[in-house]
Length: 267
Ligand SMILES: C[S@@+](CC[C@H](N)C(=O)[O-])C[C@H]1O[C@@H](n2cnc3c(N)ncnc32)[C@H](O)[C@@H]1O
Image (cartoon, rainbow, N blue to C red; front, side, top):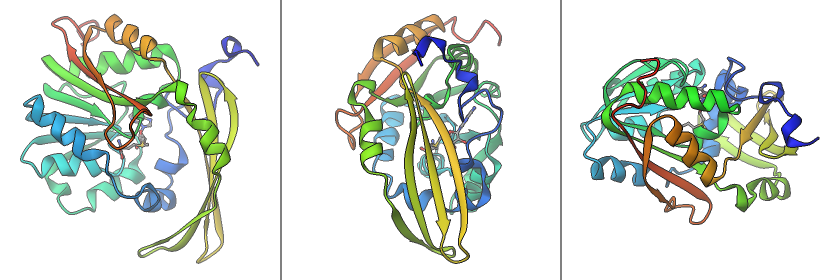
């Protein structure tokens, strides 16, 4: 199927369906998410960027199980974590240090006006927004939640690195012995590549009771130019595009600044 005939809303997963993917929203899958995600070597760079930008009030959009939000709050910053998946937020709230974060169950397209110095989207959250109008709405809503001159920093996979080919070649299974849950097996299957959209399915088998739970997702891979023009259209200035230090060559890390007018259209 030609990419231009695809409707992002017809695809599985992603913003616009109203419900986050099972991997974030199903209580049993949310409870093993961190264990399969492994050590978060990616997050120190974001704490460093918050320091560099002198950000005291930080909004973590798509905060998931709260790893970065809690890390940032531990540095004395005021942190708000927003995510639509209650199951992921429950995991976040149960962690040490979680009480220092304000947790909001909600969608990136409808963020409270918090006057943040910095908004972050880690873990490639930016790729869950499939339709152009949804990505534009997210940028607009984040712009309205930032103070004038505030920063939006996010990462997204470089499409030219074709990560899905590696995913298809490395389907698993991977088994992790998750504390208080027991051994869980994960398999990954790439189910469709209709660029710029890539769909995949995770299948988890909880070996303690043989429960099998699947999660279907679709991500959008945007080019650097596409990202830059989308940001400009919503009133952001791109200050820098960096590497993710833990994944050299694989990611764009956009460092942007809200201009005086961004986010004002619907604020
Ligand atoms: C790969 S996880 C990353 C979580 C977290 N940022 C991290 O680095 O661990 C993607 C997150 O995006 C969230 N998400 C999905 N749709 C969203 C939406 N419409 N608005 C905000 N977050 C969303 C999911 O619930 C999930 O927690």
